[in-house]
Length: 229
Image (cartoon, rainbow, N blue to C red):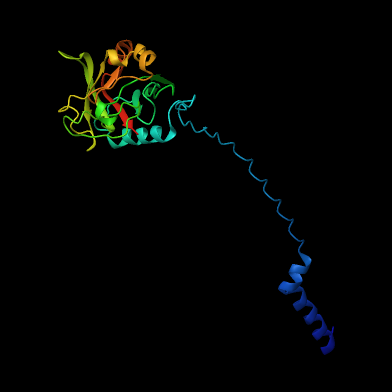
């Protein structure tokens, strides 16, 4: 059988077209599109609420600036103030007949208030307000700043008391000056009834005898007493 040249060319062209990649791709079925993977479910993360601790002085007895300075003193003198359950603040801006010695419970935040005297040298006219402060021996003035309580003691003049160590340049001679917490007749409520204010000390934090019995063991050793005006 004889094929013409034209038949060979046409047949060869068709064969080549059938073998070409384009032809094979045209004939192959298109792949099915991939299904999108489902988005992962969000994971719930438990967030612990921030606990700032107890609110100090919820009844607002203490001047905020005094509280802030006392809290800073706790950190500044942490090496000497090893007891952090309670601290004691004295606000010498207040009139002597007012409660101005505060016991702050650092665990519950509650505050108790007591009366205390200032030095006669700090109030020579006996107005009931402390105006001047000193660290000088025989000045009979009160001293401000941070103290560390040094334990319950007893002395021949003042009887039961709490010793204090001054931690700052404003009160560093507290032991030398015998600055302590002690009970005194001139700090009794009857003194307020007679003269409208408490009497004056020689620089000590004098309290009523009843209040001293409450404070003496609780102040103990290694706690902050911070006095400011």
